[in-house]
Image (cartoon, rainbow, N blue to C red; front, side):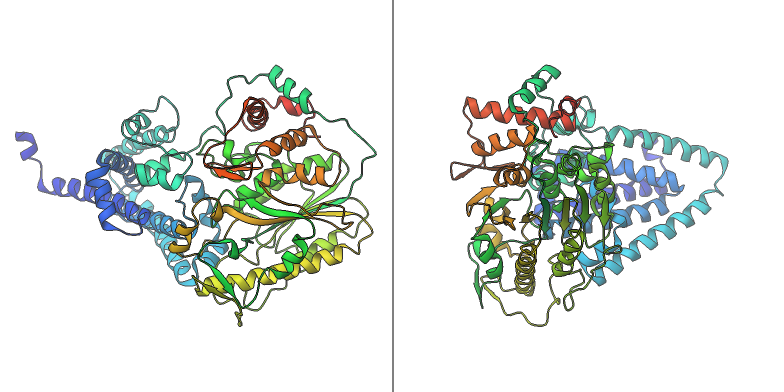
Length: 599
């Protein structure tokens, strides 16, 4: 006690200052989680979840120590630490507002996507973001130069501190390993909610939720997984090969945020039907609603499901974005692209934006696309009025240009016209949304009207092609623009249902309305279009009959929605077979590939 009293006041002030910075920064993260409600943030920290709050503070203290030892200065370490805290916290607040989900560790890879950030947050916030980065770089450069002048003793203290904090951060990075002591400390009081990361962050704090989403195995290993079991599944569903099977062109169109606002409770559209052109087509063919994993975002996850046939619901909760966390780990990955290439198709991906979003350039290469056309390599790049994105009509022209060859084509288009932000795109906004008539909603209504019109025009042009051409069109998710009142009135599947249709320019598909999930698209198209099925597609069709649509917490069976699947023994067997195959490919030994299950 005497030694403590004799500590220099300067040192005590420094320790107090550092601890204050850590606590305040953690409170700031909690504020961004709770719409800047000081009441909720303080109750979390000092009443409801105090232990988890201070575990988070410990993690932040280690990170702060790492920065300070790296820069050789507590003062400069504090500045960089605060810049990082403000940047991540602000991004978390914006993502919670736009997409109702928090920042994940993998989202930090998007920091260099300047074009996307500018488009989403607008110019003022984007300039502030750039200012933070420039300030951070300047501080880093200045502090590094200054640190070289430190004395020998200070350098040794710095090196020891850097090695120690680096080791601790590395250990923290293994948070999801069973033996991790920090995870065990959290487990004493934490109620993890894997199916809802938003609630997960609420219950465990921003730091706890962030750590929970650090790298993890894609799936838990099924108890009966083995080469023999996979062979059994393959034998049950493997299809006979027919070399003379028809090979029509196949076009995938994932339409950004395309959905039907009139399906939402509390919202009435006046001034006409923005989806009039879409409905005139959809009512005459195989169509309906698609269950999207996310609200307001998560495009890449829906795209992953549609191209691979694998469900996000089967992954560990921490596997939030397979495009960035899973697929790049493979040299090749089974998908519809590979299946069609084996059958002599040319394969092209088209995205009227940049190539680095969600690592698409790398992912498309792993899937096996022959080419990837983006905003810089597309020939048709016209836009509508003040819309900053290439129009759907232009994107369809790009598709039509690729269909001129006689070689069967698989074309995968991911549109951008209806991407946020929505304000100030168009001069005239003829539609009114009674119940939520914000400028963003009204502009969105005009956006989907233009998309609907462009789709109908595109399909009419396909009717004139000499080759049979099949189209799967769907919206990836609802836009994250609706008021809290509308969102509250539509909690559950209504906020996750978008429109989809399948179209045949020979008009051979049944006029049937269904509810489905995107991972069924390829199997469903092949079945409806009477094309050669793969063994994996046969398995998907069998599962679809029993469980037409599902995501975590949302299961559609027998025309009813439930929070859990209700499966009898026969249905459970099919579901487990699907689970085995998905594990085999994403985390197992890929025995099913050796059995040509995807060909």
